[in-house]
Length: 311
Ligand SMILES: [Zn+2]
View 1 (cartoon, rainbow, N blue to C red):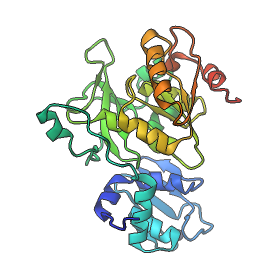
View 2: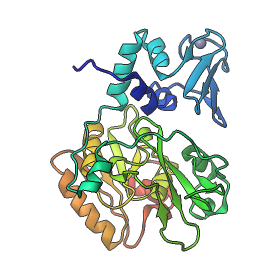
View 3: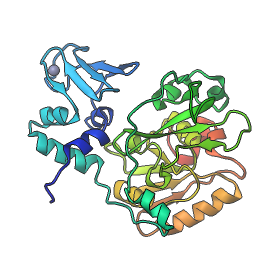
């Protein structure tokens, strides 16, 4: 195995939140950008000694005085060196080989040669998860808060839109998508330079331990609705085509893929194409979405019925 590891890249690419999920640390309570709970390192009795700042991507335990970043956390959990911790994080969250470059013009090639979306160095402030649009789309408050979606009244590209953070496999935000509330075009805005084809929306949650099956949907709202219906192992294409990079991740991470695309002509055609591409490489099931229906407009029990999940 290649022993080379870039500490800085690992720290930047992997969120402490994703690492805590990886270890299935129970009972952490969230307040704004802070998590608090029982310390998983010294396993003490106090249920508030362990604190995490999500914005700083750092932790501290008031009882055992352990503190630091993702590398320090894994080193403490595994009782290993920082180097070994970085290698593990790289293996768990960053084991994605660089995707094959599509055939594009020269200018495009220059922009795309990095092969990954760098994490943002900022987070949007004042995102309102109580905006009525979300309720209209059937997204409840808890789901909105968990996904960090809401109305953004601040300045810039996404002003006056519902913003949806897009995270990489390690849980770091790499872009925000902004959805128009009225008929304004484009319906969705993403920042220039963001390469949608390199990400699967919600992968950082779906790729947790014990998830052999994944549900594949088209859009952000489909994804949130399936999550809300009680199935957290769901990812969205952010469109209706599967890129080579997305296919690679699916095959690497899951054994069984349930296609839950829209019940319109485009969705059916995309389902067919994707099922053909994946068949023989993993176990593929096409869920029978009724004609004209799409997952984000279906009730939780209808979604569970299609996915054959007992509810
Ligand atoms: Zn502790």
